[in-house]
Image (tube, rainbow, N blue to C red; front, side):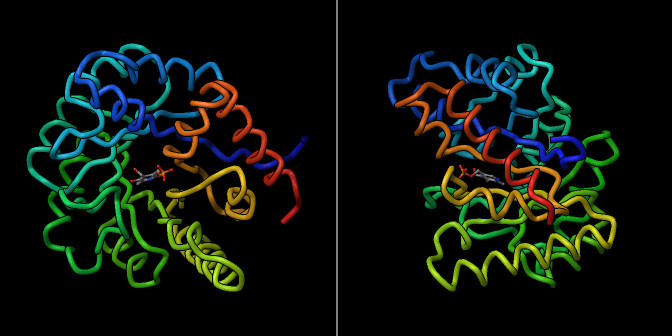
Length: 248
Ligand code: PXP
């Protein structure tokens, strides 16, 4: 694997909290999952503090930060409440996501182009605090252009359309992701990607040479039920590394 590109794997541990919350107690603890991510070769912890707290809760943030030295990527809506929380906890990164209470998961991407004025002060406050700001956007040129205008260092490309597409449409969606990753990188923005990635569909995305990080959650936590979290992460890590080892 000499000279192979290293693509970071951020593990989203929200759904450990979802299972815990189903009974309202302390088990399973997302902090224990964060510790396993570190041992299994994950490069970061991703967690979404939603307005309705259906995933992690406020107290989880500090506990996760205390338990692991891995960088924390806090997914958050563009609200004053979340900005205040991010400023208190100072995660390594904050990924601004669209959020609607009635959705089952984060649907689509953030309309960075349509929300420039609302996002400008939020991005500035987070960046001033030393937090690496990312925008979770659809792989569209106008959203990359909006990210450039906002001056963010990172975009995370929403891979949901790719993950759900079949046949030729999947190839089209993959080409769109590759094109927008290249456009972002050419303009000095570090592209990340995530949503709906699995053992089966991760390799073509991981092979996009400009991508620096993938964030993967639901599938890994689902697989963990059958194989354990450590094994699921190791298998995903190996699939990503194998895809990166293939010359572009
Ligand atoms: N990246 C972002 C910004 C997300 O909102 C999510 C889902 O919470 C993910 C990655 C992970 O998606 P999945 O859980 O489908 O792997």
